[in-house]
Length: 92
Image 1 (cartoon, one colour):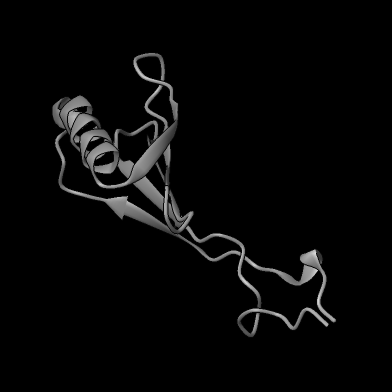
Image 2 (image 1 turned 180 degrees about the horizontal axis):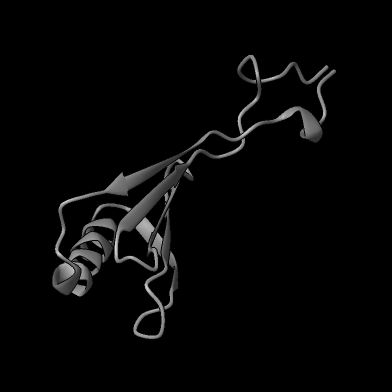
């Protein structure tokens, strides 16, 4: 029988290129607004001191996070909820 340690998460890291550094705040606000109006709960919003925003979808637990690196490039991380390797495990 599988235990909780057998579950996995899947994540992907993206760099969003082509946004001028002077538009960083606008881009973050647009993403924040999009998530908030599309079923995501904002878990952490460190603005204005930092550019980190973390949100989780209320129905499927997928998470997204944003942050700019020191060069002003936006990163976006998407992470799945914990998944069983072969679907749902047998309970007995």
